[in-house]
Length: 215
Ligand SMILES: NC(=O)c1ccc[n+]([C@@H]2O[C@H](COP(=O)([O-])OP(=O)(O)OC[C@H]3O[C@@H](n4cnc5c(N)ncnc54)[C@H](OP(=O)(O)O)[C@@H]3O)[C@@H](O)[C@H]2O)c1
Image 1 (tube, helix red, strand yellow):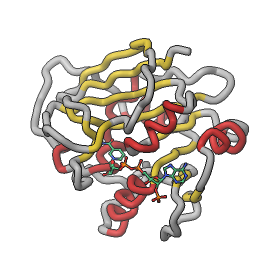
Image 2 (image 1 turned 90 degrees about the horizontal axis):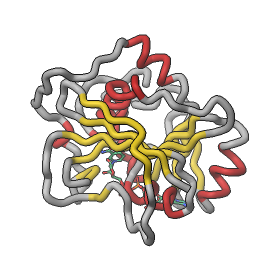
Image 3 (image 1 turned 120 degrees about the horizontal axis):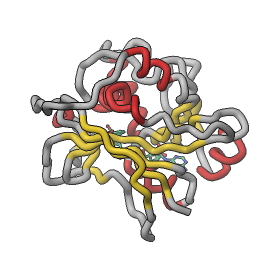
Image 4 (image 1 turned 30 degrees about the vertical axis):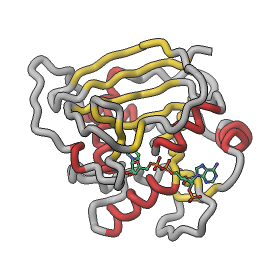
């Protein structure tokens, strides 16, 4: 999270949002790895407009009686995220933010980017991967990382759920409807039963939901 700013856009905003809502969600199991999917969505379930814009993430709402947290608590929680996994389109958004001087939202935390293309990278913490997502998670990540966070986009999150890799889903809803866009989960082919584990509401009007995936 180092170097991030409150620019309020896209992936950057997602990480700011992680800071805002995580205080009550410190539920990583004491042993073993935990795979989390986290994204921020509009109330109608979109993570970006069709053209990829996320301008709607910046809202002017204010909710009285919001949950609060201290920077220390947030910092301690962020330390429990041991690696990030993302699709190439999400990476390109983050890369573009950094290129525009808005900071890299994932700090020095190892970040695995799924792609079949040759993409540019400017930092050692980023590694590209192509192929079987289950093998990446089970054989490569789980032996080395406890807190494994999938941070988008819709296609990769859908793939993660379809393959039964996710332990929990963190769904943060912004107080806005945008009518159309890229769905939180792309193309699920079956129902996924969830257990609502936690609900928090923040001053920005965002509601953070945490679900455990029922097996
Ligand atoms: N609101 C939020 O919290 C949030 C969070 C994250 C992202 N977003 C937004 O969501 C949008 C991107 O989402 P998206 O669903 O379009 O794309 P995405 O999930 O970020 O990326 C999909 C791409 O990942 C690559 N990929 C997926 N599975 C792979 C595999 N097993 N092996 C190799 N490569 C694989 C493919 O790209 P290649 O063509 O490179 O092979 C695929 O086209 C962006 O606009 C971003 O800003 C929003």
